[in-house]
Image 1 (cartoon, helix red, strand yellow):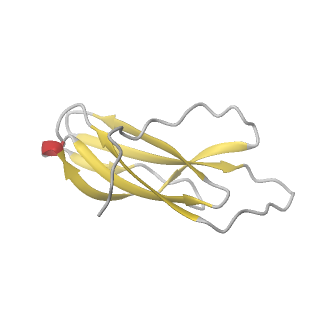
Image 2: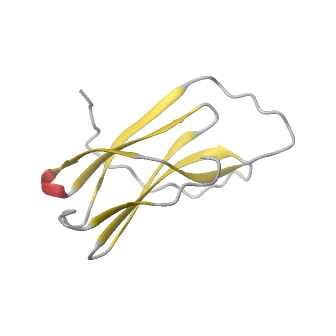
Image 3: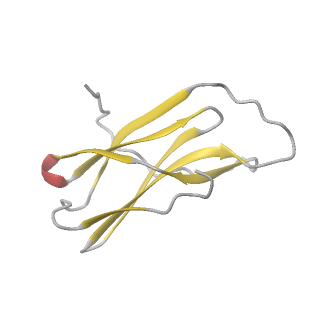
Length: 112
């Protein structure tokens, strides 16, 4: 059983730390709830990456979701990250039910 927060995923906050960047990552649709208005999804994070949020772009014929991790920018220095896996699970609320609109997965950042 998956326990969901009553608050939807938020869009990522502005990155103020210049040593980190937002990258788009793959996500998985788990369920469609609330008569098509809530899309439940999950995506992987952990290690040096932190789940950063989800954005929704929607029009009359489509819905496009982008999930983000906040990750260290590449450097010449060796980086040691904890060996932990995190699966972010939550939902996004659409302005209108998904209905017959096409659900798109936004492009994923290279290397993800």
